[in-house]
Image (tube, rainbow, N blue to C red; front, top):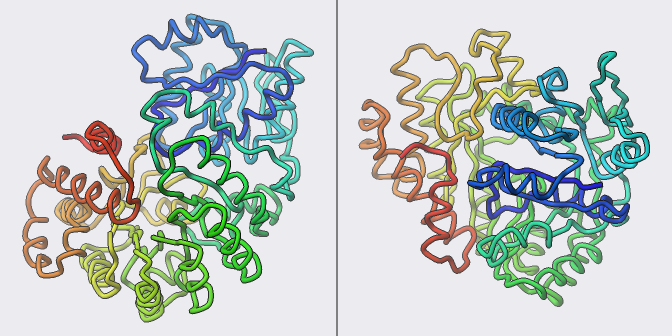
Amino acid sequence: MRVLFLVAKLHTIEPFGVMSLAPALKRDGHAVGLMEAEDSDLAGQVRQFAPDVIGYSVCTGSQRFYLRLNRWLKRQLAFVSVFGGPHPTFFPEMIQEEGVDAICRGEGELAFAEFCRRLEVTGRPQAVPNFSVKSGSGVETLAPRPLIRDLDSLEPPDRDLYYSVSEEIRNHRVRSFLAARGCPFACTYCFNPAMDDLYGGQWRRVRLRSPESLVAEIADVAERYPTEFIAFRESIFPLEPDWLARFARLYSSRVGLPFYCHVRLDLLDEKNVAMLADAGCHSVNAGLETGNERLRQKLLNRRATNATLIAACQLLHRHNIRILANNMLGLPGSTFENDLETLRLNQQCGVDYALAMLWQPYPGTQLARYAEANGFYSGNHGDLDFTYYARSHLQFSSAREKRRIENLQKLFAVGAIVPSTTPLIKLLTRLRPNRVFNAVFRSVYLMFHQTEIFPHRMRAKDWMANFRDLGLET
């Protein structure tokens, strides 16, 4: 069979879902393709590929685009449509949408391969574990198969499928990898608790790749493609001492490139930060989220104090590791003054880049249910945007309060980098949202995110592509 994956826009961050599905499909003899949906001659290219199956990996906020695209293609071609990714996983009602033949929930490597094998034999979609399938008699749903415990048993993601799409993608010098799956924590804004429910409590048991397997994959990719910087994309990079010691030794000797990873500040200590630094860690992504301890602990279910976060940032700085801080503004029930507390915390932590996002009520999260139950959100998930940099969808005490929060998000990084601008920023937030604020956000993002956090060579068109990809009107 012929299986085609369509992605709305291919960015410089690898689409791990699609790349991870391809090896098993190819091993079964299927032809696999990947196309960017924004291509001007998409219909012609899809027709030329002649897919039996078209797959979409869908995040909440992008579902409207993919559903429209699928319906448009269905009017021209005959194929089976399969939707996977976070949105159908946490919003399985998507199977009822026009043109949707099947959805896959949770881990898809084994499930999607089995679905395609059954389809090839029978000529019609059939439910397999992890899948819901629509037929003339209704919808059949099967529960997920057990999680893949041995991650080393999986073939490496098919990077050739992705890197062959364009010269720009192939020559981008930051390469991304995954060292682990699962997360032991239950932050209310995150998908992890919902995944834990889906898998009967097994998702929170973190599964690690062996350092040997991980480093071998990185070394192979770095040999085959121009590579200057490595980014690890799991929620929390493994900090288990024995694993980290083995990784540091292997990585520094076989790869030796600077890297970025996600950490949780309240898990850091002198020993694991020193090992990260010895391995070559250049920068980390760390969630401060909010500067208000009550909101952090009661609303977000994160127990760290401000003092703990500040001390962890100081520890990272002592080891010359740069910090990208994640922050969420406009939390349900919060105020503009609460978000100024968040700005002050970033200033106290001395972060190298403060990335502020407008919190979004994504379906399946405990915090979204809280927002709906307490009248902060209408519950219409169909209005969510793909970007969390544009606007808030919550109700606040006044339109003025909401406007100031949205404006603060655009100017937040400036205030964190130059604390003396805080009084001016507070005044500017009283203005109407405007293109200048959007341009400031984009410019500071590119200047610090792409140079301080991910240092690598970029051409002028790379800068412009990153500028556009932030999803704000100019």
